[in-house]
Image (tube, rainbow, N blue to C red; front, side, top):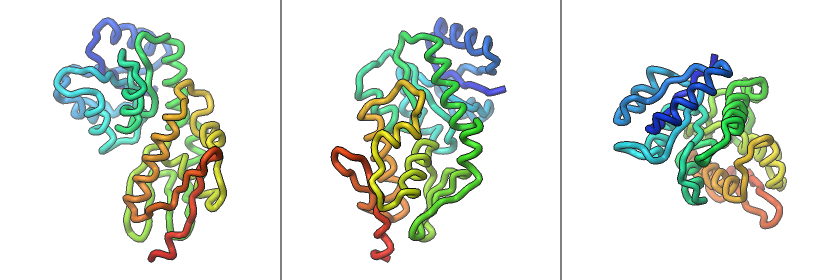
Length: 233
């Protein structure tokens, strides 16, 4: 049974979410202390988090960063804030998707199922248990880790899938459509900013292991990973 942690201070919405999720066999826990969200998260060990932006004490962006410090479980924001900037900030802080209130519960359930399939389903299992690499750069799909010359950084599942595609086709242009099809297939939350934000995060992860300026944007086409960092070492 998948466990879903709901961090939301609207008790009416929490009740509706619990009712719908229980109907489809999910176990749920709702945050009760908005100053100790991480402690509750660690005790419950959920498979997915539903997280509001506007919360008492600290906002959802803060708690998303704290969760990401120790977990790669899917995080879906649920918020009445519908600006593009809020959605971009959610992705920048480690979220996987964003639902704007009021939302249709069937769409919410579809997004939840989609994220759980990617993180724990048969597709995830086939992607895991393997390592890919190029010119000393190694991507561990099971541990969601990137390493180079002794430096290592953790990845979100989406960052790992983008890098998997880029490494497999290093030196070639990978189209935006190909990346979107591979990563988001049946999700609704897809626009130009979504992929731009994730690519920017991938560049930061490459920089964290000492690789700079290797991921190129090919205007009007897509992205290319040039494995020329060996020339710098």
